[in-house]
Length: 159
Image (cartoon, rainbow, N blue to C red; front, side, top):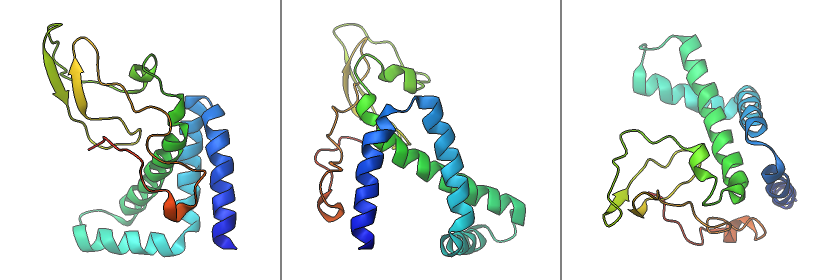
């Protein structure tokens, strides 16, 4: 029963999230992530133990709690971005990424762009100047209409 409810909730979210403006989505992710970091006592205790193991006393208790909260917020942002990504098109996706030190190529040159797998799932792909690699077409990562166990990536070009 729990998984059926989670699946229904995921289907509803996958339909509603793409309707949200980007600033609202970012604010919701911060709010949901902060709330989850407070409510998920078990996950929070694991995260705290991991930070203690990895960093010992390097960070204060307040800094560790901030790191945990921001980790939950980042995860929430990633999940909401995945559901929001059908709104990305070849025409608008450059509004949502920052490119630093991206070289300009001549029209007949090709290049490869590799980026971290970070929040919005952009691709690593060959690019012909002046174009930048376009994001995946809608639905190429996950099909939320299928049961979770069968919702493996369809095609994934991200690194």
